[in-house]
Amino acid sequence: MTTLTFDSLNPATGTVVGSHPKQGQEAVHAAVGRAQEAAAWWAGLGAAERRRRLLDYKAVITQNLRQLATLVHEETGKPVGDATLEIVLAITHIDWAARNAAKVLGRRRVSPGMVGLNLAATLEYLPLGVVGVIGPWNYPVFTPMGSIAYALAAGNAVVFKPSELTPGVGVRLAELFAESVPEHPVLQTVTGLGETGAALAGDPRVKKIAFTGSTATAKRVMAACAQNLTPIVAECGGKDAFIVDADADLKAAADACLWGALSNAGQTCVGVERVYVVDAVYEPFMRELAERARTVKAGQDYGPITMPGQMDIIRRHIDEATKSGKVVTGGPESVRAPFVDPVIVEDVPEDSPAVREETFGPTITVRRTRDAREALELANASAYGLAGTIFSRNTRRAMELARLMRSGMTAINSVISFAGVPALPFGGVGDSGFGRIHGADGLREFARPKAISRQRFAMPGMNLTSFSRGADELERLIRLVTFLHGRRKR
Ligand code: NDP
Image 1 (spheres, helix red, strand yellow):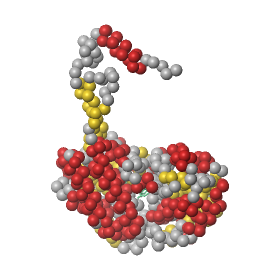
Image 2 (cartoon, helix red, strand yellow; image 1 turned 180 degrees about the vertical axis):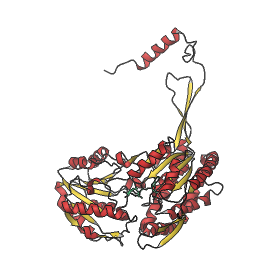
Image 3 (cartoon, helix red, strand yellow; image 1 turned 30 degrees about the vertical axis):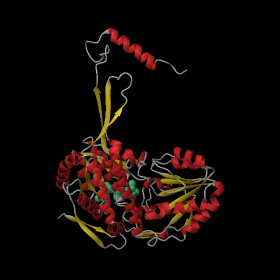
């Protein structure tokens, strides 16, 4: 007999946190049907009222911050402090999306150009309708909210499928939203396993899917979406590099590197996984890094590995790395499920799985490079391209390296700092996915541009889109276009 519910467990203790329905195709389709009606109502509410409701939702989440952080802690195992931090970040994103939606998406006039002198041209961004959000477990509030808040602010209804590991958090986010918007189910959560997400992606009434998870699952979701030409925005993780240049503040770099690699037990899509240090400062940087790493402990400074299946990947990467490289901290014995203590290995070959594949654990590989250029080349030689970090006191040089880094985001002299700036778009290239959440790009991701050209008066002697057009009108057009565009620049 198939079970109709599933449990979410505390990964640190194995105790049951909550039980949730496995919602199949029928239930998902019913939710999408309700969302369609809610979407029409929400879009009709207008930007000003949507802004008010979303700012109220922000306040409701803030008032429930402690309770929500406890639930995140229970379902993911991460310390309550870290859960609080991710919720605070999500709050700033709801605030930004609410306050900026009208400005970014609202109707504006654009120049019609010389040939269209008799036209008034307007551009605005209209809601798509129903948006499906398929979320991960590593940041169960911050990550999906990067899509949910922006999709809602753009005037869409959202059906959210949280990871099967964090369904309780997903359910709570929709319950809290209903306090601010009780009239219609503008934000609904559907719970279940992979099939629930597949049903959402396969529903032709869903006008966009925002997916966060693995590259392999993103391909499956895309294949389902292809049936209906449903567009998707895909955030699929990374193998982010951390570059330490010769003039870096080494204490600050070591501190940031460790936090970027170990916080949330390394289960961060933009976490530090590969470290490249220029030869001139290699030894002093490694001394700092190793000294600090000795003071960090799993189960004390960060939580357990949330997804049991991840343990095998982490163990394999550590085994491969320690076989071919030189251990700085930890080793295979650091894996004591569900916890993994910090593991740092140097001189691991660049073709090792520990350097090529996403580990999603508290481990880093470190390599000495001739200079920052070589570090950048190695950093860029990855199928992924989500984010990265550069430490250097030379702002101009750091900016240049950041621009050349093949990634969607780069932090300079800090880690992951871009995620806390709501105005900055978030997303990657290559195997890290495509499309953007956050910022103005994130709002536009969940809207369709609507272009309108209105003729204000008939252009005398220039009726070009008519079968009555004469040779003299064409001649005038050629003269005009030659005047406007016919001069060469050299
Ligand atoms: P998945 O990519 O399998 O899952 C992500 C989301 O997609 C979950 O909500 C999942 O539901 C859902 N899903 C699974 N199968 C389908 C499907 N066929 N159609 C639609 N939705 C589906 O990631 P995992 O959680 O299994 O983690 C695997 C790896 O992904 C990790 O090891 C890590 O490397 C990477 N990852 C990256 C993240 C990031 O931030 N970019 C976040 C999480 C993981 P359900 O949970 O119910 O299976």
